[in-house]
Length: 613
Image (cartoon, rainbow, N blue to C red):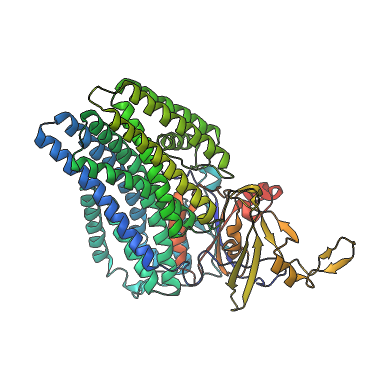
């Protein structure tokens, strides 16, 4: 699900120019990763991870238990299919997880000595982790091969870098602690290898996320920031791995068990447990993926747990109706069911490719990703393109509803003689009611619980008042009116204009903007509008001003355009950028800020920027 990039030019500079927090007409917002380490880790976050572990174990345990029951009953064909849908997807996910561990831990364990040195040495380690050959000059550190092969180039202002030690051991004692560190490294490699062979790589990542969350809660300032970044990266890895596993294992397993139940006209308790666990796992992972993705984006508001649970119920009932319709049709038309699935996957994949998604760093990786999303589209809706999604979602669910009706009607018409009419009517009503409940929870989510505000309805609006604390401790109130013109990508409206810009009434007389500021705030009527870029949203009122306001310290400038939501930012899918960020956390008293090319300059300056970096 995550791709490693071919390399992006990156520069790291110290930005010590203070900027005013009270400029008229420009709202100050909460920084995404503030001096205290971003959003505090709460008890709800811990409970959510524990529930995710429970869902993981229940899904895998019920499938293995059911496979053993089939074997004891002598149903070797069902035993083989059930076991295949458990072992093969789990092995694929474990290989991917271990590959990420190897890439992360290899250079991380090799850079311990550099991280305990001066700030310039740690910056050199960051450059090395980014994949470039570093050379030190008078101004700082840069790479020589960035222009030749696209490797990441890191330039550090060495004059402003300060020595920071990440451990109480001074550099002179590094040689004495080398042997214990090598021993710990070997033990970690053995431990991770055993875990992934036992198919427990995700379990370790969940436990590690709990540890990182607790550490970010207990520590303050620099350590909290560092643990917060690591927690976000670990959460992104877990959700991508579990989402892939859910649609490679849980979805086929659910269709298989439902088909066996309908074909045999009996329901064993273990079959019901296995199917229910698979369905919960699918709905859980889709909602969890959306929450972690929104939490990782600076230009999006976070999703509340009410919204997550509602979205989980939405997918639970729609996927349930979809899989029951699949199982009904497959119990009668096995061959035609396979043709239908392949045809639906091809159409959905072509539709996604035509949408020109922007998730990966290369064209072929993007096509492979679109093929994987095509598998997801067999079962449920999954947003892969920025912008208003109401039309695309309406088209998808209209096609899904028509397919469900056709599949169920075909089964009802050609069902076996052992199926009574009353039983058939109950099953048909189950499919219809499940899809209707899923649609109901979808409307509840978009009408009341969407993070950006309600996005359905022709004339809705609302005022969002955010009390924000700047660096000086002064609280400012920002009022925003949200309009439905762009769906979820609403316009950001600032109701307090700069004092240098006059307002006009219908009479044409200029009136200073300060005179009617209180009245405008109460009525929430826009004075002028600042329309953000397509990748922006009202979340800018909540977060993104941190990139243009008061934060001082290193700025990581990435020579890539910022990816549009719902794609992950490059520093989440490019593991070299991850290590650069984590290493810079140890060399600066202030959390490094990340700026992408599109957020730093206009289109006319892009060429000059690319040639000078």
